[in-house]
Image 1 (cartoon, rainbow, N blue to C red):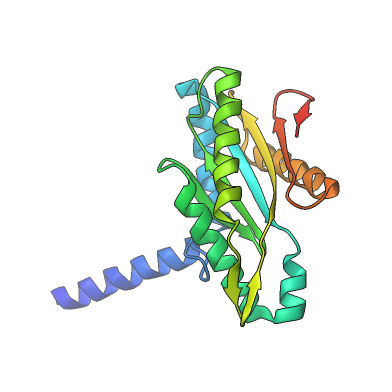
Image 2: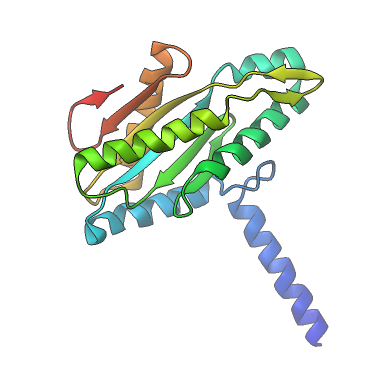
Length: 193
């Protein structure tokens, strides 16, 4: 009887994990991401510390899939996830948003705008540095670059608004070229590159 309950508990936990995590990378998926961003956005007001959402888009990923195949593409995505995860702060969350897009949720960035800017610059710098070594996939060395759109706020907000702002910022970054970064303050009309 106890063994059956243990098996049922394990099966339930496995199902819960599969529903909330990306199979390829093991990262939280889009559903869990929105939940975590919403909690972080609500907590921003209570903690009085800035929050940023970084949308990280792998440049030229379609080309990797088209020229080297989906298996090589999967290797690239898994390696990007591993490397980016390894350089984020312990308090940050990395999730897979969609095909070649990842999102880092960075809480408690500080209360002074200059400190927030420095912390964001440091995080993005570590992400870029982590991707400087080529990824080995399908007998090829693949140079990976990412475009980053960041949305930041120091006020409570809606998760959808924050992620949409990051999406607009990454669109602008990709329009500038590969490897660009655009930061948008959710509560101001300005964006910085």
